[in-house]
Amino acid sequence: MKSVLCYGDSLTWGYNAEGPSRHAYADRWPSILQGELGSTVNVIADGLNGRTTAFDDHLAGEDRNGARTLPVVLGTHSPLDLVIIMLGANDMKPWIHGNAFVSKHGMARLAQIVRTHPYQLNAPAPELLIVSPPAVSRTDNVEFSQAFAGGNEASRHLAMHYAALAEEIGCHFFDAGTVARTTPLDGVHLDAENTRAIGKALAPMVRRILES
Image (tube, rainbow, N blue to C red; front, side):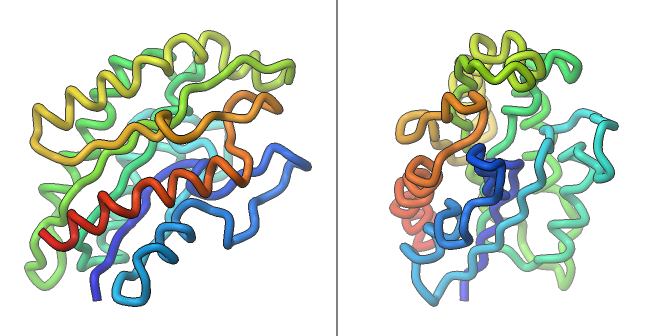
């Protein structure tokens, strides 16, 4: 059986701006991906609200620095055939850095960790698929508009920088913004239809990667 790790933030966790609440398990994009790929693939969802690529955010009880927590996650779920990373939206918060070019470097650090981690039982490093999240959008939600001030402009450049990184290091890339849009309820998260769209769109690419 093939194993695929989906490493991300609230978009992977399934944060639902309505309520707010958490999307039903069946609506989260890793669950849709699992359904599309079938029983010969094990899709592992590891999403944490507020997770960044490689930067500290001490406003929560969990460690939100994706670079610091990724080695533990890789060791926990090894061996892996593919790691999908969709992070960067939380980097757009101005107190994190709010700059897509800097997020490229954060994602590069994550890619380095995936490729150099000392996997147990001498397992080979998995394939890597970098996913650029849908851009932050304008919202009348005061809390989120302040928390992500400027993010609607900065996040539009994530796909360009991530695509360039993928070409530089020779890994796979997908722009989730081509199939999904963030909800105007908070400008950051996805409604059920859009999170499902990401899982469905990723399935053909993931299938090709696993079969190659």
